[in-house]
Image (cartoon, rainbow, N blue to C red):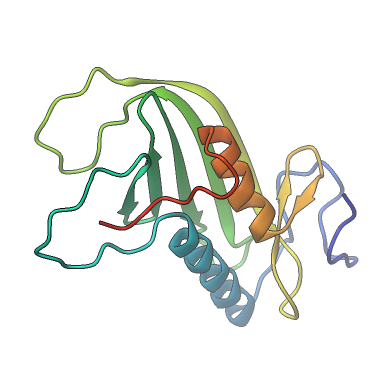
Length: 165
């Protein structure tokens, strides 16, 4: 896949860092992109009094990401914004798990999960236009492609989306 945005400040293909410096406007744009992706993957749960059937894929929003839990597998998406203001914007970790993940604040005990695969993505782009995500191998993915990858790692059919209870 060809890069959506390139410039002289982009890290070389295969580099784990995006750019040596990112301004506040770009940092905020990356955060908005992350927020939109998380909202698509794990919509906020609405308040309701009605009983609903258990969804095939349960979603949980966390402070910096989300967990998508199916019957025997899970995908976690975690955003780690960089604490330094003078270096890259952060890292997006997409992890596939076999088993049931412990949910933050849960009181029930679970058997646990085994990490199968983890992909670390860095923001790729400029302050203009859509942000994309660069993998360690240099491949650049749009936000929609990252969302599709998460669903594929979970084993969810393309049209199946987690539902907010």
